[in-house]
Structure formats: C-alpha cells, structure tokens
Image (tube, rainbow, N blue to C red; front, side, top):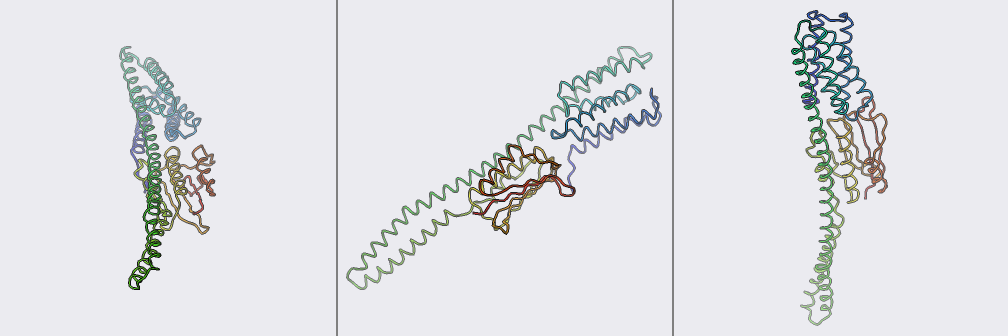
Length: 376
C-alpha cells in the first residue's frame, strides 16, 4: 500500500476547505447577485479548475494546461466573490494566489494579488451599504496581507523542495563517484600487490629453485635427497605465488557493494536493489553499470514523480549482464533521451552492449530501462 505523504493530506484538507466555503451559499444562507443555479455551476467549475491546477503543478507538467486551469479558477473566484462578497468566500482568492506560485513567475503572482485585492474593494464598496470606507480598506488590507503571506510561504516551500531535490541528486552522483573511486583504488592496490609478489617473492623463489637445481648435481647422496625435496617445494611455492597473482588480477569487481552505496537512503524514493549472486563483471563493465544506475535514479528524482524504483542486475542466457529498472511514476508516452540518457547509451554501446527505454503503458507501471553489456 502506497504511503500518503504530507502534501497529499494538505491537498485533501484544502479541497475540504474549498467545498466548505461554498456551503452557506449553496444552502441558501447567503444571497447572491447571480441566480443560484449559475452560481453553483460557477462554483463547481472553479473548484475543479483549482484541483486540476494543483495536480498539474509539477515542473514537468504541461504549462499550457496548468496555466489555463489557473486562469479559469481565478476568473471563477472573481465571479463568485463579486456575486456573494459576504462570509469567508474571499478565502478563495487567497487559495488562488498561493496556488499561482507553483505555476507562474512570482511577479505575475503579485499582479494576481493586486487584482484580487482591487476586486474585493470594488465588491465590498458596491454591496457594503452603510459600511464606512475605512472598514472596507481594513478588510481589504487584511486579505492583501493574507495573500502575500500565503504566496511567500509557498514560494519558500517551492524553493526548499527544489534545493532538496538538487541536493539529493548531487548526493547520488557523489555516491556513485565515491563507489567508482573505491573500486578503482582496490583494483590499483591488487595490481600493486600482484607486481610486488611477482617481482620479489616470485623472483626469490626462482633463484632458489635454480640454486638447488645446481646443488643437486654435487656429490653426496644424502644431501642430494634433501636438495631434491627442497627444489620440489620451491617449484610448488612458485606455482602458488603465480596462482595468487592471477587471482588478484582477475578478481571480479564488487558490483553489489557499489550499487548499494549509490541507492542507499535516498529521500523521497524507495529503491529495491536485486543483484544475482552469479553476476561477474570487470572493472569497465562495473563502472558503466554504476553510472547507469546513478543516471536512472537522478532522472527518476527529476521527472518521474515516483515513490519506488526497482533495480535488477542478472546474467542472461546469451552471456550478457542485464540491468533492468522500472519506477512507479508517470512514465513518458514518447521517450526523448536527454544528455544523460544519451551518454548512458553511448557507454553501453562502447562495450558492445545496448540500451532500451520503455515509456508508460496501461498496467505496465512507469518508466523502464533495459541495458545489456557483454560479460568479460
């Protein structure tokens, strides 16, 4: 079951507030300048437009649809407040101003706030009757203050969310770079040890074997038997050293550890990592796979609006190592790789592999990537 976060609860609460604002008018407790049927239709359209604008408030959403919904909501709220200016219905204008921060530049938000306030002054002046002018100004100033405070609060929240997203992406990239550096350092250390073993111990044992071989031809049967056994032992030790050197040179990279380091504790995204036990890759293949997972995680954070990401690495029957990922986000009806995904494709193709992207299909989940690289 998907966890409902604070933003979803806040949105549900705001929807409840919007529905409650219109109840006095819908129940007939407040008179309107419009026929009640038309007012009710306008109210329903305004609420629906606000919901659509809120759902389209992500940076990846189409700006035309979201701004059109905002425009409908703004005009609808003006009609509602102007036709029934009493009560708390003016809070609709505060909601519109706060929502506009997600969809338009802040300068445009200030213009909307000014227009909302001017509408309130005109509506209250027209229907205020005996109300003193200073009461109208005071009430308008209060709603102006509420709109500005709400807009600034949302602006601060939007900036914080953007910075948190950027920080998470940078953190993932740093983890990937650290994992690759650690693997490179381990590889360099193995090569250094193998060279030292070959240059020192191996050389010494070779000289010892030659010396004992020369001593074997000297006089004395008892000494000859000991020398023969020593020569045999020296040759065995030399073979063991060479075996150890070969093992150090060909030890597979720790792919599982590197990937676990990249995907561990990512805020806002739960990553399920599955690496088959029989996966063996070289240093180049490991680096490509780590970079691929890093790029996929970064793109998921930026564009997918996903909660979970599944990453699987396993060998196939053709001797290739296969990376498969899928998120539960919005997917993409048409896949247009950016610089990051194009770089991912180029890395795999350079090693003789391939990459396929799969956008969202009914019942298939979100965005998927399948990448293959030949085993070493």
